[in-house]
Length: 307
Image (cartoon, rainbow, N blue to C red; front, side, top):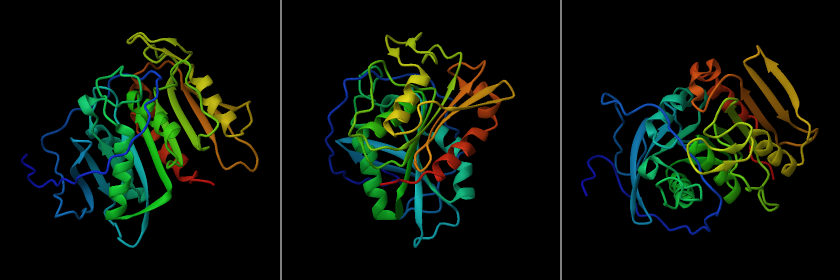
């Protein structure tokens, strides 16, 4: 295989039991742009800015963007933020929405590409059957040989199918301090097991979403039944030992924020209900202005891993 300026490494295999739960959906935005300029990788050394990486894992060549802040210092310990695109999307979307924050906030952005533009969150409802949980952990293992990672500040964010995968990472691993899900709830019957590590959770969801119904029920796109957005975040709140009744804050009639917290508890769970908005939440001003991604980063930054 021709590598050009990319590099390949052989991955250690990670084995995980696959959940029998259902998985998610749907489209992301943005196609690759031919005039994108990506910094070349010299041997195995990451450069400041955006690096395009190929690596082999489980016999499959996988690829991603890894973005280091322009003032990157090898002696500094950096937070890491993953962005997982939606079904049908690609790694360029994460680069577009998270990339501008990397330099401002000094963290490392990881934007992987899913097999057949999808993520395996457990049920086979999308094309990917890859060991995406294992690959995510392998990325972290490899990244730790390249730079110094702040292991208490590793975060995952995803849209739709990528949001469902972020929830799977929260349920099946113990490395993430917080996760955020856009347009993705639990599948019906999925629960937070007692041995899952408590972590902070943020969900942003369109109230008129029919593909992943905000109020729960049958998807308009796939043969999947979903829990409601409120049921999903309430499960996390109860698991984390937070107050079951959220604080409610309505902003300009376009968005209601439900916040679950408790005095002395370092974890927080938050739900943004986007009124008048469908699965394609980019139509909401909070999303289209990219303000939501700043809010998500602030949420992440306020919630390091707690033991």
